Length: 155
Figure (cartoon, rainbow, N blue to C red):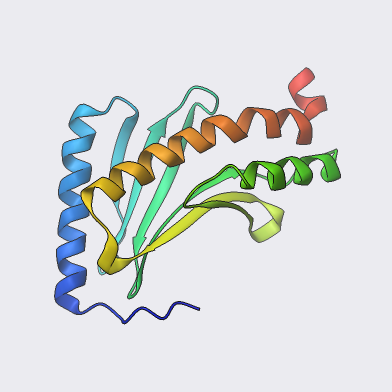
């Protein structure tokens, strides 16, 4: 349970402006960022499309809530085969991740996600979150794909 106090509208506005400015600057200098889009009206959400090596293109969803800054990405659908080995692999990989974790979502899809208290988010945190997400997707995706979709990958 998150016991941090809810952020004020002013604090949320300030964080939204900081994230927007950081992503604009980072998008100009970081070749891994392919595009940044905003959520709909009234949403404090960003869709950051990234270019990877193991997973060619993927999107990080960054969302400001009343108490937390949440970041997540869809890693892959539920495995088609070798379910036990697949989920065992993900549990082992989870121990290696700092500040986020692998999660099972709707339809057994696999996500990478984490959050920070709104009041604690700095530019250094934004850099760490983006860099860690990229590194973790690169580290986890290909081996998990080889286990859970072995037949399809072998073809």
